[in-house]
Image 1 (cartoon, rainbow, N blue to C red):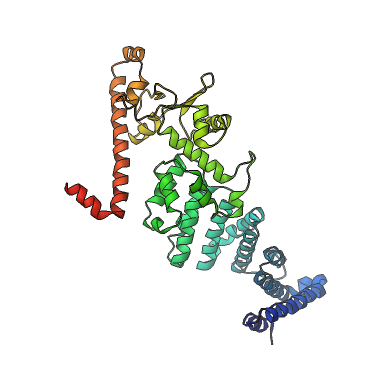
Image 2: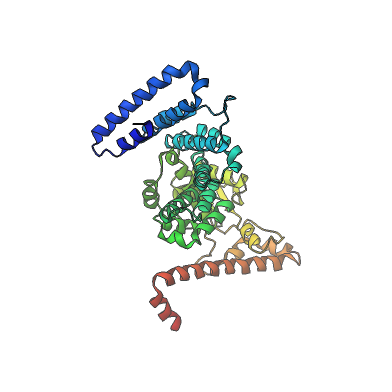
Length: 401
């Protein structure tokens, strides 16, 4: 019986104890053969390659990913004594990458993926191409480059050659990575893309995706439930002793607060985010410096002022003009205005500013105010659409009234 036939016969054994013994016997035989030809590998390259691939299969069946990858790394691919097809090299490199990722060795996996990338144009094998694309996304995921990973996972989820369940799994991975990505305009665009994908409504993470897309503050119980679905590397501690998820949630809630409040004290923001006031101030400062949030910080008064005109101007196509901080009259004052009827616009402009306004600034403020109303109406329309999808009869009755 040849080696491949023996491997096949062992794989078909139903008794687990007999199967393990069969693999152990084969493993010892392979190792002995490799030891015997070690000094003459050049003369037996094809045989050594076949033995190493079979031995890696045994280790893989035992879920010994590191040992399987190590065995494949010894396959002679760059010898001058025989011509090795590029497609065979790609197959070995991609298999090593997959095994290393199973063992959470993203750094080494990236090295072998780069070797495969140089040769990918030489293969038309769909399975190799798909595995390569998926490996790219997984490595970006492991390296905490979540925006890139989310985009790549989402692209893969549209490939028709993949089973529909696997496409939904990659879409789910795209959502997870988008949630974990640093808050800012790029992540907002990724969240919008995923939220508008009709398939996302079937995912278990749709509720948290919806909240993030609609800029709603996330509660601790929702975050805790979401964290139970994450992989170990996505829960790893960062330098400041927080996890990637902690950072993502804090930044998201901070960005949400910037769209609700004109200004807020360090203490109130810390209470909202569930962190110390100094940590809240430091996080806001970092996001402002990186251009992911617009505003200013008053260290003396211990206040953070949010500038919401930037996002409004972007909706207007980058309109130019004076954009104030939009600070309300009181610390923590909501942008929607007080119950007495005062608006954010009136709170942001004192009497001296009104006297100094030039002829073109007043129309700009009016335009920005109109855009704010348009923005609010857009959010209301989105909510009505969500309610209508779940309760069509109720909405139809209300519209008829």
